[in-house]
Length: 161
Ligand SMILES: [Fe+2]
Ligand SMILES: [Fe+2]
Image (cartoon, rainbow, N blue to C red; front, side):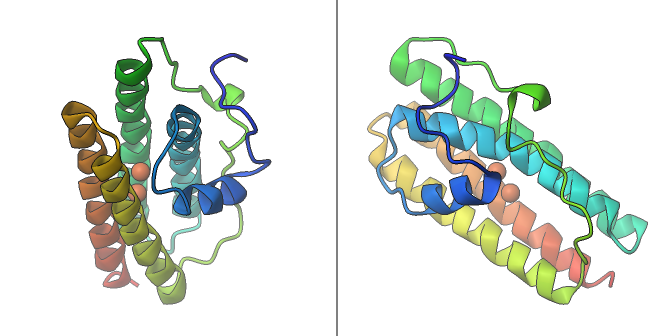
């Protein structure tokens, strides 16, 4: 599949851990992040399925839908920087599109999510600083700002436990 980045890590978690260590992303890193972000949608769907009540379920599903939108901003970054077409992967094309089962949505888990989302904002800020294109930096910062919104929703969810 020409759309895929080279050397894709085997699973979502390994890919995310790798990307968290990247401060100056290559085009393949942006592509990998698009796969991770759409995988993030499935991640949130899976945990929403295990949420203890409807309020928490709704908050988690909102986050999931925005993860997909983040992949669409990464598509714009990739296309502007390369001049080539990039297609956001469908669930069937994406090895990271896996809904986790059996996750207990409790205070510890929601605190873990808050930290992961704040880390996401830090990562996008670093990428925006190093991308060398003002418009692409703006798209990356918009993703980062929404990761902060996701951490706020996770905080709100703690109040519904
Ligand atoms: Fe995201
Ligand atoms: Fe997020």
